[in-house]
Image (cartoon, helix red, strand yellow):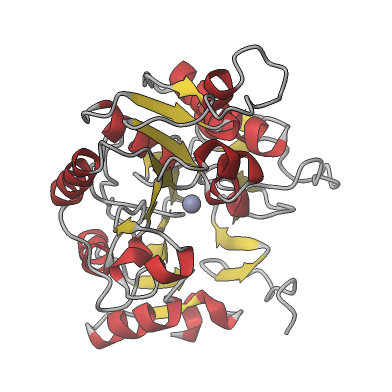
Length: 354
Ligand SMILES: [Zn+2]
């Protein structure tokens, strides 16, 4: 059946098509859809694969405001050029999801059933973010990016310590730290600020994401824009003598598409710059090779496998639906552990299917 088709509305049913669709006693809740058409529209966070398309609302019978944090609404303006109109509903509670700045899980209580949709989620405290605190819920719809045994990360303090040690051991060279503009980049800026590195530089797209976070989340970043350093007179030309380049002691925080750009190649030419990648996938063997990194660290914005299991135990739901990453494998793990669980990859799933 095509992904766009849904089963007839059955109270309690959870389906995956364009986003996650939950039929509740307070109406159809649609979460993280490109063209949301539910009674209640939810956006968990401002990563582009979770944001609605700009100008995608064509049916005025449906909700026009989006239930999300004000920060996610503002970040949508950076990521998609149009901010979200932020709404709320008395039966929907937003819970900090611990994934990236502004990310929220939702708890919907229709008086009969409590539904929790996590979006992307992380239960560990990291830098300026508090980890997700699982609520009690009857139905849990959760991500399972690292839902496979083996994807277990060291403690966050241990990861930070390893990053600090590497930043110090490589002080005689500039370093390029590669991570998503929203999420990893903010944590890396904070880590660099607390290290012995002399300057923390950021690209324009990271600066654009920082702005609403500093304005709305009571966080500040002590950084310089790379462009202001490389091109102080703003004429968009680099000094042919190579003086306008990264220096030993510099740490540059950029997303991967910028790290591989010609501009960065020019700025790092002849500087012996090292690159580091940061991702939960660094817990596996191929991340460093595929990314061409000199060093990698398993700094993640998601739960690892053990944390996903602990999250389910804490919520103690009657039914679990998994999506993203190892959704099938994680649902199977949960079934083995005695839960009623199903991967939403299989298109149709309702409570009555169990
Ligand atoms: Zn995300």
